[in-house]
Figure (cartoon, rainbow, N blue to C red):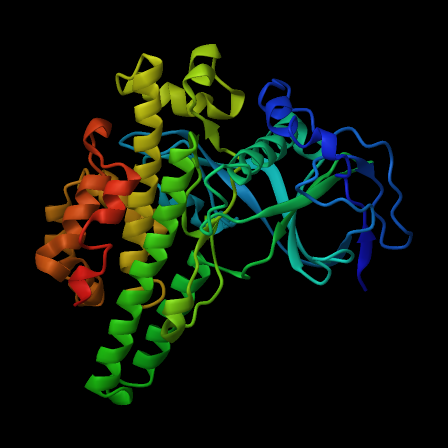
Length: 425
C-alpha cells in the first residue's frame, strides 16, 4: 500500500535562493516543509520554509512504497598509511575485525531506503527512491548536517549552466517529518550498486567452478571474460566521469566506493546501455576558494586534518589535496572492480584488498602484482590489469601514489589508455 507524502517545494521565487541559503547556513538547519508520516493516517503538511520551482511543486506529489533496505556509515577514527577519513559501506559488523592497523567504528547515523513514485503532474509514475535520515533524537545533529549537505550538493550540481551530468543521481525533492526525519527523493535509475554487481559476478564464478572446470568451454569462458572486462571499464569510466563533473563544479565526493555507485543494469551483454551514477553526497565538500578561506566545515574536519599532515597548508594546497584524496578513493574503487568480479566469492573483499595494498605492500603495485601472480585464484584479475602492457597497473599506481601531488586529475584518468578502451582492441 502506497502512502501519499507531501512535497515541500512550491515557491518559484525561492529557486534562486536555495543554493546560497544552504551554503551559508552554518548550522545546516533543514529547509524542507514538515510533514507527518504514518502508515495508518494521511500525511498532513505544515508550514513551508523554503521552496524551489525546479523540484517537486505539489503537496501530494510523492507516494511512498516499501522499505527496501538500510545502511550505516563506517568511520575510520584512527589510521596509518593513506586511508581516507570516511567511506560509506553497507553495514557489515563481521568485517570490522579485518583491518589490523586502521580502527574502524560504525557511525551513529542509520539511513533507510524506500521505494516510491511521483503521484501527480507531468512526471506522474516516475519511480523514485527515498533516502531517509533520522531526526536529531535518533541520529543527532550529524544526521541533519549530512542531509542538508547532500541536498546542497545536488542543488549546486543540478543548477549548473553546463547541464545535468548523467553520471550523478538526480534529486527530485524531499520533505521533513514532524519527528525531524529528513526524506530526500531521488530519481530511481537502478536498484543495484557496483558492490552488488561485483558480488553477483564473483558468486557466479564460484558456482561455475563448483560444477567443474569443464562446465564452460574455452570459447564461452573467453567471451564471458571479454564482456566482463568491457563492462568494468564502462562502469569505471562512468564513475570517474561523475567525479570529474563534481570536481569541475568545485565539489568533492569524499565517500566514493562500490556501494556509492548505482547501476541501471548489471547484465554484461547490455554494457552498451550501462549508465553508472554517483550517489551518497552526504560528505561532499565545497572546495571553492571562498569556502576554503572562510573556514572548515564540521563534516570535512577529518579531510583537512589529513591535508595538513600531508603538508597542504594554504587554501590552494588544501583544494589540490581534496581532489587528490577523491582520486585515491577512486583508485581503491578501481582496484576493487579489477579484482572482486574476476575472483571467486570470498577470495578477496574491499577491506582485505585495501589492507594488502596499503599495509602489506605500502602501495608498491609492482610488488602487489608479483604477489598476485603466485595465486591462481587471482589470475584473471592480474590478466585484466596486464592488458596493454600492464596499463591497468600503471594507472592504478598513479591513482594510489603516496604523494598526493603526483596523482592525476579525473580528466587525466579518463584519458588514460586503459579507460579509453584501447587495451580491449
